[in-house]
Length: 227
Image 1 (cartoon, rainbow, N blue to C red):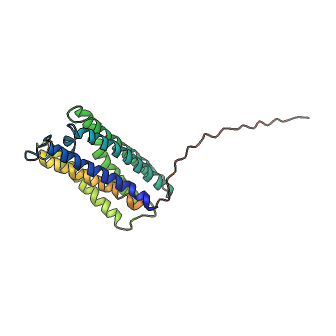
Image 2: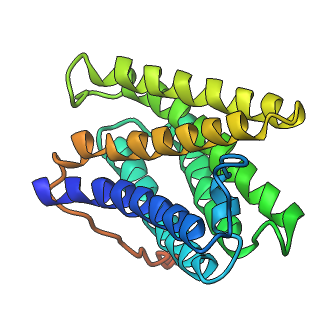
Image 3: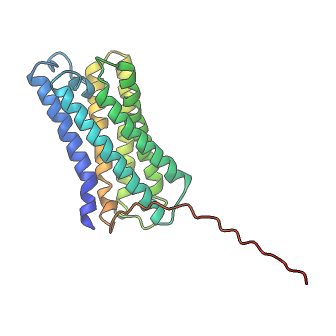
């Protein structure tokens, strides 16, 4: 059902549009000065009123990320590939979602340490999640998207990984503008990787969650009568 393909696309466009809207608000009201240095994503969302919008965007994004990761996990199982790789992938995806929520609700000017933990989860663990998805792409069958989906995911992951490494190094070297640009690129690439799930989700017929009751143990006692 093609409608399920809209879910990861909705996630990508909502988050990307929200980030750039917050950036625009921060520039307009003077919370950041792009003539001095290009701001980090979280710096744009650190000051009111855009901080409120940023928090809501990250919360909605965290919910959608979790939903997408759970569907992908179940899809892999339904293709007959239940493995530790799939389970670890689900855990990484959920940690990524939790990190996004922490980033949105604990701004840099209020709780920097919690914010940094959230940033690590959302960016670095999120990047790990998609490297695990590369492994699943080449493991499960059928592989939707043909031969192109695997290389595209690998290229996007390489770009994201390179940007994250540069982000850490450039921030340490006090090259804040270059580091911020790397952060923005990494964020957009991660959202693109989520959007690529549309290729897989368009083949879903539906989504169902089952609650299974514990089966009662029935013990049959056999009585032997001796005549």
